[in-house]
Length: 343
Ligand code: SAH
Image (cartoon, rainbow, N blue to C red; front, side, top):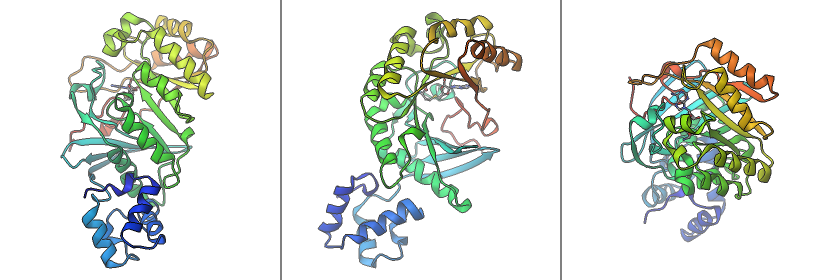
């Protein structure tokens, strides 16, 4: 019997405990160990009778079938290299902000989307992650933070992979994260997509006030297609229409991510084109100065171009922020996640 205790629904877990002839409160004890105490090994759950501990260890897959194999911190960001049961390595990044601790979760090992500026794309696609493997990143991050008495308060599905290309598992993970054991508010969870329109529409119908983040990166179809192959399937206007609908249905402001690449999409005219396209929408623009990726000819924008770009947008009354370059020295910033162990 292969049971995955941590991703079961509450009723399934209760039924399983009952089938062992154990009292109901045992379930609560186990859940407390995992989700409150961060004890991720059944054999160490001290208040459980030894036979129950042994049964759990034998009948369920381990609490976690993933482990941290490297952790590196750079100021406000800690990159955890997480090795999965099949030895694939993905990355999860803990980011320290004024308002809390956000965890950037990977949803796939590799990625199929092929964005020209992204390190993950360069390694190709290996496989989708399961809900267990996404939850493992959260539990491992919390275990990492425990020593300081801290835990993850926000989640961004913005690590390796495209969450809407692994829709079922990403959503199942989100439902666990907002559930009673993790209790992270849906408003504090952000799903970042390269613009897969059917997935955006489906997400709008989930009844969850999640933040939708769309990586636009160019307002012009030709330029966007040269950077992001997915743009050939979904033109900018079609993506924007889906974003407007998402904002309308969920009453949530949608975030537009825009990676600024020197000489490619960072000119004043690009900013004006962007304003023309998105004006009037319930949007917030987050500018991300390009983070260097090995074997790439792209370059980071000059600080002056970033400033001008931001001023054009804010001058038109747009909500705009510039992302802090968290984690660049550990290759843990946006677009730098590869999954290899950089020693
Ligand atoms: N597939 C999802 C989530 C992963 S990418 C998406 O496309 O949104 C997360 C963010 O990193 C995206 O906004 C992407 O545009 C950005 N990004 C990718 N490579 C980058 C790089 N080299 N520098 C800065 N940001 C980058």
